[in-house]
Length: 90
Image 1 (spheres, rainbow, N blue to C red):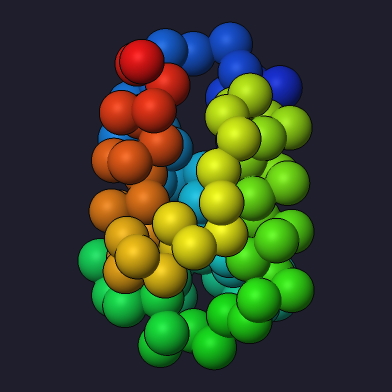
Image 2 (image 1 turned 180 degrees about the vertical axis):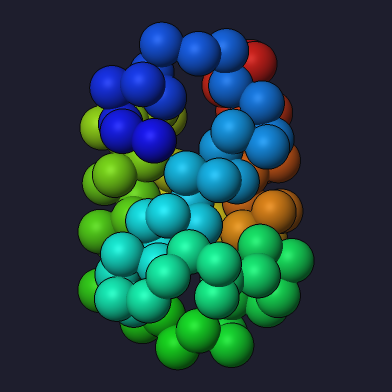
């Protein structure tokens, strides 16, 4: 799903979760099928540089400003997706 496609839809947890999985898979250079949205983010070895980059992608694609700490506090991509949908609804 392209970033422009995502902006055209009402944000749902499933839609945002799929987008996040694709972003992480792209960063890790692996198939999206290898990313478990419910697994702790620490399992993927994502560093602070990537956290800042992903926050930039979130801001650019979803129009939401988030702190990189959200990625560590939310623990999993599914939890991050739920948090982003909640923020978008405010």
